[in-house]
Image (spheres, rainbow, N blue to C red):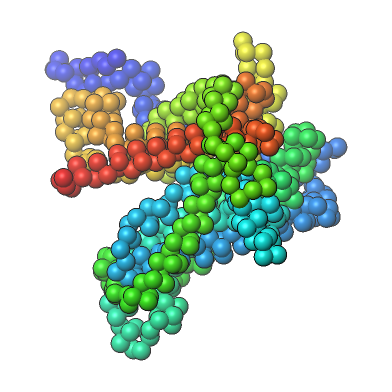
Length: 580
């Protein structure tokens, strides 16, 4: 409700909102900022701080101590888990680079037919959650998988999926698009004249790539590599499904779920997971600090493309096809498993059927319903918060507004398993009125976890959308007598609608397949979402067909969401530029 004040002459003055009249010293945006800051503090900062605090707490005396860390490093299992997590993350970056570098360089450096198709196919692995592809890749590359069964005829058996090797292969295949996307963008932005100058000075081939091209593209590569390292180091679902428990994230989950939330080792491991996430971001920043990657003109035309000879063309296509077949193999195997009857000790399933889908829909209705509710509610809350944060940061002068952006984005550096443990520790004793159970055991906490985990995605979309809204339109509305709240409702939000919708779709699609946080917070099967259902199905050989069918559904949800978000973004871009 708005009211109009009058000046001394009885003429209408400035409209005042209900909020302005109740809190005359605080504007509505200031109150919104306080509310959002309190929400982020309560459901992100406080739980993570609680985890860190308990990691330094003596469970007997309650005093601060470093003994927990001494106990951690004195245990051979924990030392092995620490080394394994670091090793798997580093090797996943290396192997992901092996996949991404040729695809990025070939499609950027040469006149290559189908370059856009190759780039699009290279993005597909991100659509499948890694824990879904883990079992599928085991059926192809495992000890008794299709590839090794064929190689066995020649007396060869390659341990693709044995122990840590399996985690590295699955994670590399899933996360290499982060490097591909960022590196391809950097290669396209290299100033062509710098390459030509190097060629005029005698640099060619690998020397040109090693001394000029790759150093100029280093920011994109390091950005992608740091993301791969963080994602692999924090991932929980893939090691669990491959039965590799001697890594940090599985150990944190197993300690809390088996021993209880009072076990200090779970918190020490969580602290290390957070610390290494922050460390990897800081290290990538240090590697780029003090170095000049600037070009003399924006984009510079990208690398000069040259034609390939017939032999080179055949070789390039061979490399590209081999890489694409490998990185798309989880999708192929998942489809075979979902439609197969029995697939054991044979290169292909014995037959094909739709029964797995009948079983999946018959037994997974609650999982699907819960996922629609949880992911939908989380995505809606995300766009509300993201729109408010974007407006406060870009359109107001509120003191400390930048910290809202920092706090919301900080969720990217917090592993899902750590957030789940933090919620269990912080809210396990908080009884919800009229519900009769602790907040940590109520299904609403899953929605909150998904909201916090996906808020950075929605925030980036809403921030980009608001940056493209001219502030003069808001000023014109206010000059015509509209209050700020009315201007936001009638002018700003409609103009941001494309970005808001893209943020909603992205948050919904990715929240629908979140496992790391939800596996810690599911208190009963009736409250479980789709990702948890896939995890349960995949625990037994008889349930893997139905689990694969549920995995297909998860892939379809993420794929549809990704395509819809991209279509919305493209439509908005064309509307701004006048393209048809």
